[in-house]
Structures are given as structure tokens and as C-alpha cells.
Image (tube, rainbow, N blue to C red):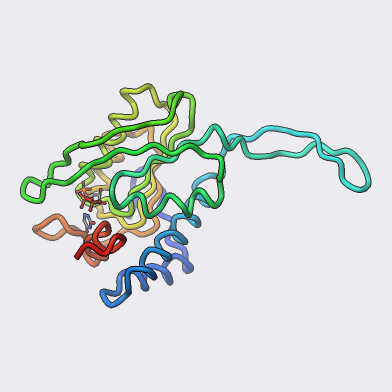
Length: 212
Ligand code: PRP
Ligand code: URA
């Protein structure tokens, strides 16, 4: 059950279908990567119903008409390295002119606390709608820190997209940043004693990059 107003669980049959593929431990690296990209695109479609738009004039073969287009350069995508990188291309396929920043976070596997090792963001990020992306929201530590970094740089309109989340991570992020809209394609059962999501899909970064 989701009791947080700022959290949206997409839970769509098409996404469930794709999740079944990436959860399977026998899925190869290329398929895993491709499906992560497809889910990211579907999530971007769903989470950008309030995308900034502008009116332009278009001439059809019959007459001039006012039409609405997306203000693509008002959007920044910020993947949390490494695994978040896997979601970027899917979102760029919908918003090709979006800017991309990077935040490097690594979870200390003993303490489960996030450690930031890199941060490079587009100019004027404080004026953009910022979409922070990471396939996994586990304890929520990485997500909370990444969002806090962006707020320090003046970002006011932040969305967070995770493919799979644990209830623990959703609660932590929703409470720490109630002004951030959190989109999750599926809410899983819980975390195990090592901070992995159950049933989950294992280590998203390792599966995207084939490092294990
Ligand atoms: C994973 C994942 C998230 C983080 C989630 O990254 O991609 O960034 O863990 O865990 P949390 O919610 O408990 O902070 P990881 O630290 O494994 O780094 P990687 O992307 O380089 O594999
Ligand atoms: N990070 C991952 O990649 N997977 C998990 O299940 C938890 C954190």
C-alpha cells in the first residue's frame, strides 16, 4: 500500500511483462540493457504528463493553427552512476534535446551508506525540471543524497524515477523530500540483510554492464 501523496506506483501490465524478463537471472546482458531502456521510456511517458510546454504556430495543408510542443531544453536527466546510466537513452528517445548531468554514488556494502564520488551537472540546472533516475531504490540512501545535492544547487522541480523499489526506500525518500515526485514502476516486498531488494533483480549496475 502506498500512503505517500508524492509517490506514484505505475504497476502497468506492460511493465510487469518487461520486469519478468529483467528479474530472470538467465537474461543476458544485452537483453537486460535493452529492457531497462524500454521501461525507462515508458516511465518517462507516464511521469511527464505535466511536462513544460509552449505554443507554436503550425501551418497544415489547410490553415494556420496554434499547437503545443514540449519545451525540451527545460528538462535535465540526472542518472545516479552507474546503474542510472542504463535509463538515460530510453528517456532521451522521448526528449532528445534534454540535458544530461551525472551524480556518482556508490553504496558502501558494509554500512549500506551512499558515498558521492562524482558530480557534473548542466548549466542553469536550477531552472530545469530535473529527472533523477536509478533503476533501484533500496534503502533510499543514494536517492536521498542525490536529491539533496541537487537541492543544494538550487533545483526546485525534481522527479525521481526508479524501476524497482523497496518499501523502506520509498518511505525514506518520500519523507525526506516530500516536494519530490517519486515514480516507481513496481514496489517489491522488502530488503534482505545485505540491502538487496526482494524479489528484485540483483545488482542492477553489474547486470547492465556485465561486470559480474
Ligand atoms: C545501486 C543502485 C542505487 C543504489 C540503491 O548502486 O543503482 O544507486 O545501489 O541502494 P540504496 O537505495 O540502498 O542507496 P550501487 O551502489 O550498487 O552502485 P552501481 O550503480 O555502481 O552498481
Ligand atoms: N542495488 C541494486 O543494484 N540492487 C538491489 O537490490 C539493491 C541495491
